[in-house]
Amino acid sequence: MRFTIKLKLALAFAVVIALSMVMAGFGIKGLATLDRAVADLADEAVPRMQRTLELNGDLLSLVRTEKNLVLAATKEEMERQDALLLQERQDLQAHLAKGEAAATEASKPRWAAFRASYQQYILAQDRLREAVKRGDRAQALEITSVQARQLVLDAQKNLESLIEL
Image (cartoon, rainbow, N blue to C red; front, side):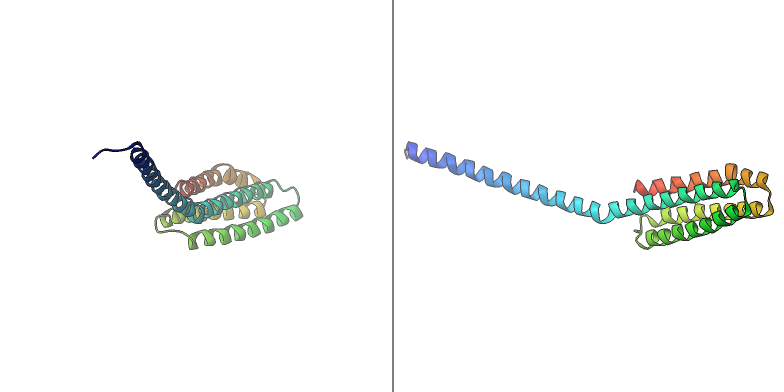
């Protein structure tokens, strides 16, 4: 059988069209996979990261208020800072509860580790508050400079591990 130029051109275009369709199929499949990955990222990782960063901000705000409590010059300022400290604790607890409620099975141990280090920090902070109320500024400075600082660093490491998930 003899192929004419017309038939050869038709076959060549048919092969090019078929190869283009195969490449388009692979491209569509790749885009669908990418879309699922981005959707998973937006649905799970981004909200977890937002909650974690929000908790870190709450923790740093709590530390700043603690320092202000230790440095308070008057009884009124001390009482105001103490009330603010308690309010910030409640805010952090609320954000922590939201994070734990939305936690996956893989992240639950890390949330529990953050809660444990945070609770140790709260115990140290309660000792600090009592020292400030007694007027024992030296002990309050010791607690905030050494004990509480290390506990905050531990809590921040636990928060960083949540971001890395």
